[in-house]
Picture (cartoon, rainbow, N blue to C red):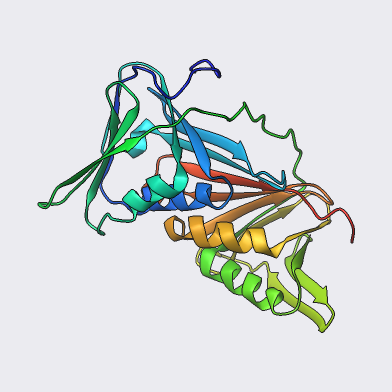
Length: 269
């Protein structure tokens, strides 16, 4: 890994190309929900990013292995920092079948190439990194479950009609999502079903202990909207009154690429 004090103006050399823009769109949108500037590390193993939002409520952790890319070359470790609004603006210009190629040979610019017969090339000026290393929280998870992305989106919207926070309560047989506000209460229950549940709303559930914790709906809505487009299912891990880890895959053909969000619980019930 590059030294954490290394600036964006290095002389690393890398090329990373994807067959479609969907993964880059999910990555840039997800990161943009939490931070305005992002420092990416590039090694032969792939691309990584980790940072916490200014309020210290949420943390995003990206691992994008080199095997996920159509083309990936990294001759030496590199680190670069971009303003996410500017970077995402270029990625959004990609059409659905465009190959997206990100590269840097030297200097203080990032090259973005979009091509599918009609080729566009952009040079994005890099900025100095102001981020410090963000350690991952050391957590033990008592409950783990997986939902379909559309189901979780519906759950958030249903509970948000009543409350700004969502309480997740998992047992061995079901997961209940609830919220309460000045106007009343809302509750949604997903039950574990026998047989193949891979296509249902609750695709898996393991609860070593009954777990209950409350989180911000605003954050969950933003990250699900941003990262959910690349993933058909969402993995959740948490313990009572502890941070929630939400995992989104980077497309159905990914070989391990994922985005993790850690969301702090609401302190007062």
